[in-house]
Length: 591
Image (tube, rainbow, N blue to C red; front, top):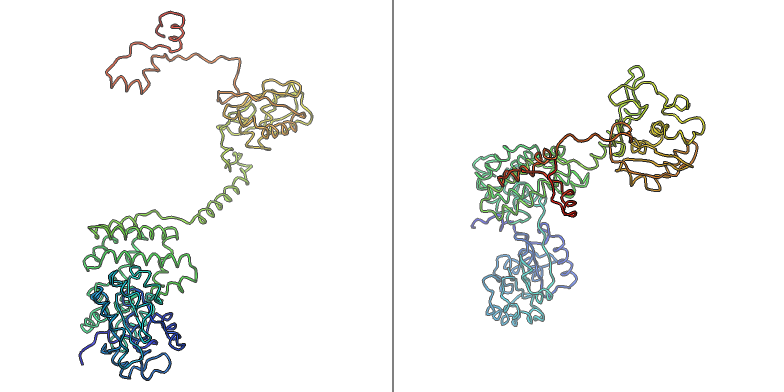
């Protein structure tokens, strides 16, 4: 007997031998047992997942001469003929080579004849999506009302190409991709039966490379068995097959997490030298970071979802502490976009190198919750330092750690307040005869006429009550006080703040606690910002800088003169020119 490849030798011959399609086999078994077999079935799914094999098993179950229940015996003449493809009542048609309307007409002619020796006449049309539109239309009537013993089974990898009129006349079964653990277990069974010693790493790499296809996994294993007798190592075997081994993926992933750009380039060179597809390697890297992200955020439920071997999980857990979930998500997003760029690129190797270099140089992101926790810890530490204050023996001022932006407003030196550059001395009274020291409220009501002199002491006292309000009153003065009303002069930037009713109410309540009477405020702005209380009796000194010098120092004027090659003749005042023209005189140059 001639040699059979593994894909044919290990093709399932009963529903029990089908791997990874329990939802399909269970439904078909129940339909056979209950006598609810439909006249048309549509099997869809990826390549090599068992569509044609299940169609043959269904045909054997319906035509088996010694069938007990829903399982074919495999020994009767009908089962043997169907397995070998010689049955005259089970016809397998290739839709790609018999796609025209003439082939469908011939099928319609043969449908009228009853089966020769079996209970059912079954047509298995593989790749049915290749039929033309005219062929589908010619098949509609026969498919909707076939003769009683006739059964149609369609198989396709592209169900979206089948007209809806055909889909509505069939029972559709979607075959799933076989997960990696099941593929690995089946490969171990085959290797044990074939008496070949292969490591689990090699079998796992083959299962991952098969991407859910049993036929692809068996074909790769068939090719591997041809090399296993030469005593090659695991790396050499995978190198010969051109399969992406997990070691290269883990090496590249570790280099990305550690920011090792040189190792990334070396991995790409090794992958290119071995003839591995750059896009396929990028897809394996996507799986690597996806698994890491699952383990990072999935807690104890990740392993059940991923279905990875224990050795793979152990290798992944070693990488968990090297990046936060946010960094892993950023890497995964970049890899997904990079895979599309590699697919469309005319230089895949160069695109893969640039992708890995970008990933190795990405900024390391931290979790927002971790950043917030760290900020809260620092805030508690700073608050503890500020609360302890200075040492009495040292006599140094306490460190000022403002907790809000309002406390950082600039304040000048008030009368009786120590300068920022000088060490604090004993508190001096503002008015020797008033009895009210700086930083404490007077014992009784203050006469209104003394309010102007005591205002700096009030601001000093206010720092212990409302530091924000005291900071904004640091450059303020009280000009006049009469009959419970006072004119408050504040910096222009705080004018709108002190015109707010809520702010003036707080100020009035605090002033009443200090001075002993209610005050209605009239707020006026002040433009100057000086370190001491401004003296309104002094006139500002006249500027000694001439207007011509100011104009010549202007960068705009300098650029204009340089570009135009001109010369400054005179400087005139715009206001004087306009006034002179209005009076009918010629304008004069300003000094």
